[in-house]
Amino acid sequence: MSDKIKEILSKYKTIAMVGVSKDPTKASTIVMKYMQKYGYKVIPVNPSAKGEKILGEEVFEKLEDIKTNIDIVDVFRPSSEAFKYAEDTIKIGAKVLWLQLGIKSEKAKKILKIKNIEYIENRCTKMEYQKIFLKINPSFPVLQD
Picture 1 (spheres, helix red, strand yellow):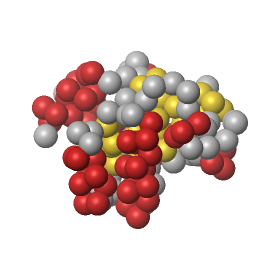
Picture 2 (cartoon, rainbow, N blue to C red; picture 1 turned 120 degrees about the horizontal axis):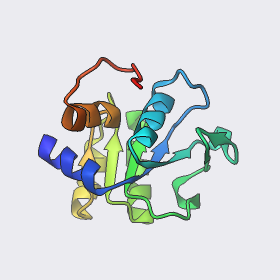
Picture 3 (cartoon, one colour; picture 1 turned 60 degrees about the horizontal axis):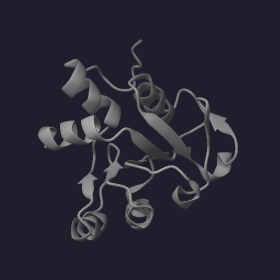
Picture 4 (tube, rainbow, N blue to C red; picture 1 turned 135 degrees about the horizontal axis):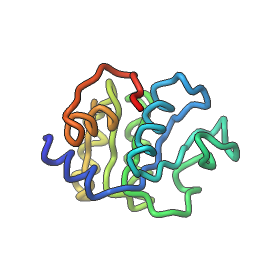
């Protein structure tokens, strides 16, 4: 699994982050800031903050509204919503659906496998980046400078 994650994080640099909060203390916002720091273009998706800015990036209501090509759809939403985001991932032509810690969906996994789209569940992009590329394993949600 870590080889697949290393390949994904090395190859793909544009992330649509679903469920990013305007609250800078929330895990999603910390992860977004961290991934930006390490060279990723992170586009926030949050209907309640549509048109606003989070960490300098315009917030979109839904994935289909983003005009940029998305590599990774990174989801901070409940498992019950994962299948919908799997369908959206296919619709926008993204390469990976990444479900954050605690989020899983067998149904989403199956539909993505058929479409040959990578599926990662129950993993944090920030923590995986730190383990693989920085060889550190700090506890979440510490943001290190």
